[in-house]
Image (tube, rainbow, N blue to C red; front, side, top):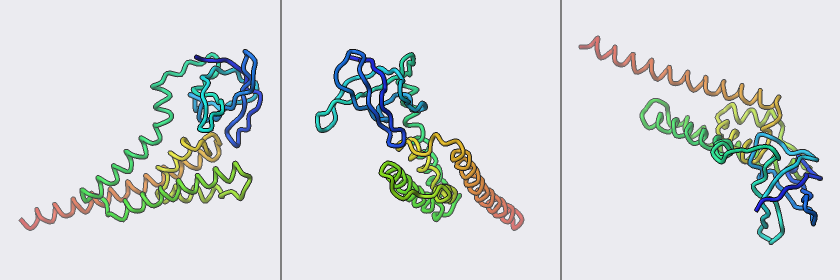
Length: 207
């Protein structure tokens, strides 16, 4: 059963708030992860519909929250929530295959895996620090890890943790680091192709 209500409290930095049901009764807790539309941030006075669920401690909370007037299909919602994970997995798999077929040195794979793991941890730490008003990680540090190969997991962290995904200036610099990193990877591929061509030509000349 779905209910309708108004968001009367919202703490965007911490990602949660409370809904006042139109039918009356107690306020209902809602977390940002419960919204089906991850591209829109909730604000006070938004009208939403939701399913009533309970958390691990049996407390009521809103689930499958939809902004009034929106109809987000499950397929679109799935792609948005999981698209970054798919990109991360496909890219790292591509690097792994390139390494095992001899097109890239194995150190490149280890660099991407290590940088990605560290980057996700740094994003999680910064998200926690933002929630608890602790010391924050500088944005230049996040961009540095993305630049050296951590961008696949940085992308996943932005979506999964809802962190830095809406700040336009941050996103511009982030995608610049992605382009630069992929450009460097493409350059390595060109070197590999050049060596292969040189090897083939050398064999042909000897014949």
